[in-house]
Length: 378
Image (tube, rainbow, N blue to C red; front, side, top):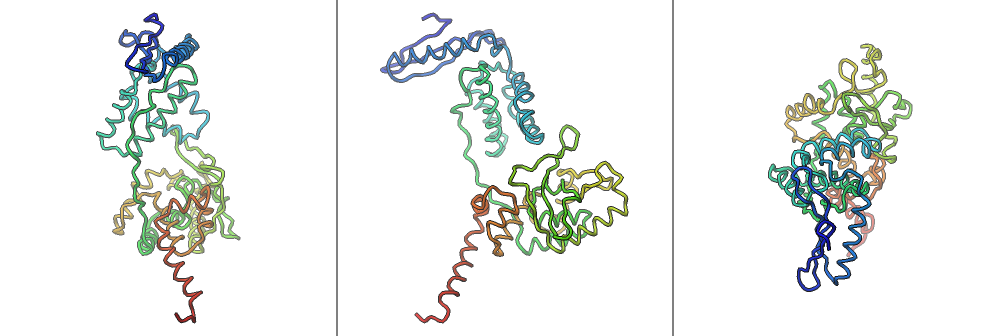
């Protein structure tokens, strides 16, 4: 068979190497091939070669051999990702590619990208001591891009397929104990954002949710708050968006103490005439009436507060985990906790906070024994 069309090379009994000519690599000028080992009869190898040649012919006229990985990723992000996902998700994809994928393989021609080169990119991440979670996330983003390239007929095969990834690590959840949570709230009361931290710890909201709360979301008579939006900064602009999922839209009961803190905050905001800012209805703002950036909140207020109170160095998001853990520990029904957190199901909540289950089972067993065995002699 013609060298420029394809080859079938015998590699042993019932084993064949199929090679499909893809053209010349614009960067190196060398011929590029798709190679695959086929096990079985020669007829199987011929059928595979015919199918791949047909796919290659369909993709001719689409400049798959003339674009680099960087050029393709730019096009993919602009046309396939940005119109379909939230701004925060888009920024996360772009940042992951910019930090870890583009420096390693960005200049390579898309059509000649090999699994070995992708593996080398991941190995470089491992050598930098990056977590398995980060590497697996980078892989999922790149794989999504490559699969779109195949759908666009820019590639014949998926070079991410078969690349080995580090095993996912089960990271122990960091939460505050009841005493530590009490200390946190006491210390937070002296912070300019004490009300914010109280809302975060007692409601279990995500940071993007409580930072996007507006005064109109509070039902003062019922003592509840409606969670209907998130806020994040994208390309220098503050963006209000829908919650993470439809189930995340929910109504949460506020504790009496937290409701009083919110009343005081509203009174101070009215006196300071912050309503004249561009975000007059936003509950938690900077001194200038601007939305609070999560990174700024952590660096300037949250981390120093933990340090001053001699508390563990947890993440801001761990206040959500602490809220859920404390609620389950004191006996709040998992279904109620799930609804408060905006989880997809109570089963997901129990799976996420399985570390609480042994304690709950001990208490349940003790209560059942007290109810059933009271007055019985064995």
